[in-house]
Structure formats: structure tokens, C-alpha cells
Amino acid sequence: MEKLKVNINKIMNLSKDLYNKEKLEQKPTRDGYGYGLVELGKKNENIVVLGADLTGSTRCDWFKKEFPDRFIQVGIAEQNMICVAVGLALSGKVPFASTYSVFCPGRNWDQIRISVAYNKVNVKFTGAHAGVSVGADGATHQGLEDIAITRCLPNITVLAPCDMIETQKATIAAGEMQGPVYLRFAREATPVFTTNKTPFEIGKAKVFREGKDASIIACGPTVHEALLAANELEKEGISVEVVNNHTIKPIDEKTIIETAKKTGAVVTAEDHQIMGGMGSAVAEVLGKNQPTPIEMIGVQDRFGESGETDELMKEFGLIAVNIKEAVKKVIKRK
Amino acid sequence: MNIKELEKKANEIRKDVVKMLLEAKSGHSAGSLGMADVFTALYFGDIMKYDSKKLDWEERDRVVLSNAHICPVWYATMAHAGYFSIKELKTLRKLGSNLQGHPDRFKLPGIETSGGSLGQGLSIACGMAYSFNKLDKKDNWVWALTSDGEHDEGQMWEAAMFAGKNKLFNITQIMDRNNIQIDGYTEDVMPLEPLREKYEAFNWHVLDVDGHNIEEIIDACNKSKAIFEKPTLIIAHTIPGKGVDFIEWEYSWHGKAPCAEEAEKALDCLRTLDGKIKSEHK
Image 1 (cartoon, each protein chain N blue to C red):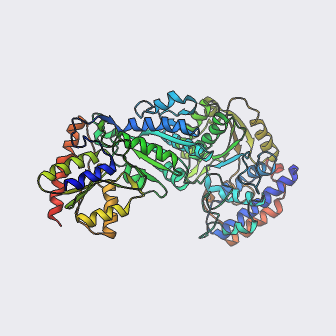
Image 2: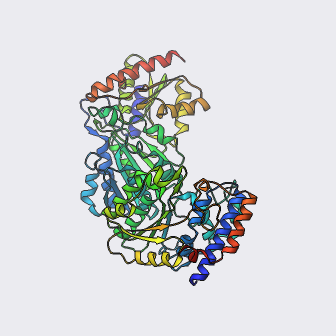
Image 3: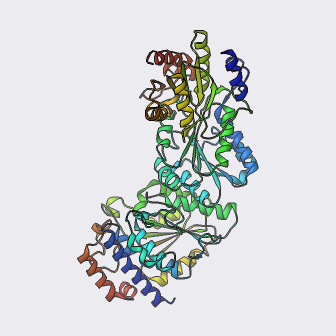
């Protein structure tokens, strides 16, 4: 068992301090977006970034500083922003429209449906400050529905990377692929547990830890909570597989079916409403191909509220201890 | 084409619109007939740069139809301009047709952007104009066709602000000011006036034209290309259903197609109209 774990970590090149939260560097995923944009901007002069009066908190200001001529300030006007991006894309640019997830895709969903998705244009749009982990700003600014309302649209790729480094990779991969992409990321600093050598490919979920009794399929910073839960459970004699499902659409059916077949019990975990979220996408795959008992960790049909991030994650049941309980519960249902 | 020939062309396009709508059994009659003169001027009045046989020509102007429900008149004009056969017009709104109820750029090459939800086209035109003018320093012109009614949408004004801020002089917006929308007259549903002053306050140059006077439309379009550092709005005052007496000014015809008998009457009107539209309106 120990040998198996070491092997997978070698392939995935995760941080050596993976299970030592204290030792891991803490960085917000949005930083990865900022770094990714600058890197893309250097490689491709067609990269253009649009901001809607949230340039600093989405980390677009880093791109703006490097490439002032390729940064477009649209003001607090998300509907216009996304359609201006469409016009830029139709003229050969690769625009990244950047703001909070509650505004994009929240406020401008019809524009995304028609002008981006139906029109199948090469527009990338990002939802920063997703999840209750946003903290003190409260319910209005905690995007909990964005995965649900983007993954139901044809032609769109939906990404929710797990840490700062993976967000940088996802940003670059989004900029290098053709077609509309939604990128979700969070506000708060979370453990950086992948490394530059950790493989990342859009559409390919990655097994970050192998196990045989149950599988946790997670996305976003919740992946680290899942790993912590799995590590704790091992001490209790329960062997748990952890899958980083960063691409919610197109979903990696193969990896999901394989892990469910192998362990026979699945827990999904995400900082998003359970209804319509990543877990729902997993349930759709398994219900059709490999019926398996599933427990879902996520926000349970309620709005967020103000508080410290740690307090909220606990209050909403999105941390390792909740995932652990869900694993035990789902194993009983086998 | 001289003005007389252009007026005849507009009349042919109107007849095709009636035939298409009859065949489709649904669609938007009033706006399509009302904009026939503007579309004719754009495509046949030596205004726009396009080549219907070379769709990816880099120097082509871009057309964005924001009030996409009047696409029957666009399709008919495009067919006359050689984008596809006039015969194909009869497939409008049928299963598998290239001529969707609202334009789809993948089904109909020559369409620059798919659309249908009101209020979005002007923003898309802004993105194109920004790309040409600010980023690539190219001369391509962007023609944004909009309706008066869709100015109820807040996004129209977001786009108007954006174009004004960035001095996107390479956009000419032509607004179909026909005073009607589905529920009634625009000024009853949600008053829009004073449109000129509103746009001027947003740093646009505004021209008013008789939307059925092809000479005036061409003149305004040419003027718009000479305006320095400001986007131009041409408010085309049109009569909904223009050319067919029983459709004119009837907002109930906004989203309706003629039945066989009505179409026969409409075609009769148009046959006797030949070239009279301008003189009648003056």
C-alpha cells in the first residue's frame, strides 16, 4: 500500500509536503491566473485581457502592467464586456474576460449562451471569487452556481483547477486551445500542493492518490481537503483513491468510470452548490455507465454568508473531516 | 446602380421577403419590409467593402445584425448580392436550412456572428471595431444594425458608452427607428426619446435620415466614414411594413407572416409600387 502511494506521487510529482498543511506554501488560485496571463501574453500577441473594474483582485493588473495596449477596461458592465470579447475573438484575438463568478457567468449568462457558446467563439471568461471560501463579503459575492450554469451550455469547456500552479497551467492551456473556456478560481490563499512537474491536460482527470475502498472525486482547492481526508482514513485502515477532476466539461468519463469500478463507492467534493455542480456531472456519468453509491460534499441548497474562510468552510461542511464522514457513509452503502 | 435601379432592387428584395415569409409560415414581416431600403443601400450603393465570392477577404467590412429577427431582409439582400442562390430563400426556417430563424454563422457562410438575443450586437461590433482600429491599425469598417426597441436593453447603453470612450469612429450604427415593438409603440412601451441627445451625450455623432430614401441613406453612410474620432449613429426613420399598405404601421405585424391571401395582396402592392417609395414619402 505504501509502495503504491509513493509510485503515484512520483508520476504526479505532487509536493513532498502534500499531507503537511503547515509546511505547504499558501497562495490564492487567482494568482495563477495572473501569472498565466503574463506568460501567455509573452508567447502570443493576440492575447487580450478585459477587466470590469476588478483588475486588481482578478490579478489582471499584472498583465496590464506588462501589456498596457492589450488590456481593455470596460467598467462595471459585464454584459458588454463578454460581447466586446466576442467581437475581438471574431477578429482573431484571444480575449480573456475577467471578473467575479457571480457577475460572469452570473450576470451575463444570456450573452454567454448566445454570443459565446452558440456562436462558438474563442472567448475565455473567468469567474474569480468562486465558492463560500470568498469569506467576509458574504452571500452576494460567493459564486456557488457557476459550474451548473456553464456546464449545461454546448461547446463550452469548464475548468476548476485545484491550486495556484494548476490555475496557471489551466490558464495557459485555455489560451492555447480553440473555443470558449470558463475558468473558475477562488479568492483565498490555499495550499500549493502540485508542482510545475505535475501533469495537466484539459479533459483528463488525474488520480492523485490510489486506493481501493472508496474514491473521492474533487475539484478546486477542495482536492487538497480530499487528500487530507484520504490520508487520515488510511490510519483507520480505509484505503481511499483521490481524483482531481479539474475539467468539469468535457468530463473525463473514462477515469471516473474506472475509479468507481475499482472502489465501488464515490464521494464528490466541491465548493459549489451540490445541485448541478461537478458532483452532479459525476453522478450523470456513473448513473448511466457504472451505477455506484455516491455521497456529495458541497453547498446544500443554501446561500453563503459572511465570516472567516475557515469558519465558513467548517460551517458549510466542506473540509477534510466532512469528506471523511462521507467516505465512511458511502462505504456502508456498498 | 443608379438610384432608380436601387429602388427597383429594394422592391425585388421586398417581394422575396414576402415570398419567404409565406413559405416559412412564420417570421417578422414589418421590420424586414421596413429595412429593405437600408439593406439595399448598404449592399448595392457602393458603401460596403465585400466580396460575396471571397468570404474570408481580410479587408472586408463587417456587418452585425443585432435585431436579428429581421434576418429575412438580410438573407434576401445577401442572395441578391450573390452569397447564395435566390432559390435557397424558400428554405427559411425549415429543418436543416442554412437560413435559420435567427442567423447562424456556421450554417450560413457570410454571416459574421450568430445572434438573436436583443441588445448584444452593438457590443460585438465594438469588439470588432476595437480590434481593427486600436489593436491592428486596420481600416475595416463595422456596420452595426440595431432596432429602436432593443434600446430598452441596458447593454445597448453599456456599448454606447464603450464606443464613445474609445472613440470607435470605425463603427456606423444604423438604427431602425420604426417606432414599434411587439407590445405596441416604443414610446408607450418604454419611451426612448430624445434618442439623438442621448447618443450625443455618449459622444456619438448622430445623423437622421428618411429610411426609405436610398439617396439620403447612402449620403449619410458616406458622411459617417468622414467623422473624426467619434462613432456615428444613423437614425433611419422607417415605416414598419413599408410597401405593403395593410402591414404599414401595424405593430401586430411585428412577428407575423402573411397567409397565402395576404401574401398575394402584398405582392400586388409591391408590383404597383415600383420606384414610388421615395416620392411617396417626401
